[in-house]
Length: 351
Ligand SMILES: O=C(O)CCC(=O)C(=O)O
Ligand SMILES: [Fe+2]
Image: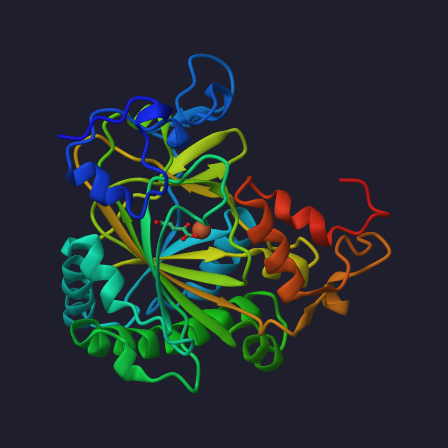
């Protein structure tokens, strides 16, 4: 049994938090402990945790005749919604869950061997958010970054079919969602969707059960750097969204996906639609998994508010920013609420 209670007992480099938990970890290693004021359930002050909030994250059926009005309301009021009747079969979802569970159940050594070191490999396995974060996030991730030139055979055989099929289906779904979002704003969708969906990546997140969940985050508060994220979460609660001073559970709804607006949509709409701050809690009893599909512009593209959203009453809040610079800035600083948006903030406009 491994007990890692303090710095002196910590291994130099943690390759996988699941590996430590499986070995019988009793206490959270120091490098995962959040400062008291950042914790999700601080003793006093700070944010309220609302378990029984009268408002729920909107759930929208894509086959409803009311969907555009509902999307408009969800995007302007929440920045997040769940969708049902999305057309992605439960059998494909289940195939992908099985393949992902299988991957995470393998020993770390085997996981690392399955990820080719070939520069064209589309897969990456890592723990936390990135290697130099100040306090580590309680999660392991398999990242998938497809490219037109990628060799599909570098994806392990048991993941290949479900992952590539799911990726294709989600690309189509992201287009449907982007078009609905554009329609809800009465803007032309073609250019916006061509540009804001061109970079597509996936993250398979595994959050192990945590012996002291009050001390950690699966993923600390952040907004997504790109334009749109579609998440398939399992039945374990953990994802929360910030609404004013409250944190609200994004309760898992069977066969629903969660849609999150990212920072590039806030920039594009000059803050008319806002990216949403969210985080993932850990719990003591059950591991949680999510599969997140991220969409954004190509890295060389520049994003700035569309003319339609800039008026004398509402001057531009964001300057033109190259997406690769935005990503570089975000990945150099780590996750801290919506603070990365400051990078694109127009200096003439007070916050
Ligand atoms: O695990 C989740 O449900 C959310 C993941 C997330 O927010 C992210 O990967 O950016
Ligand atoms: Fe996120």
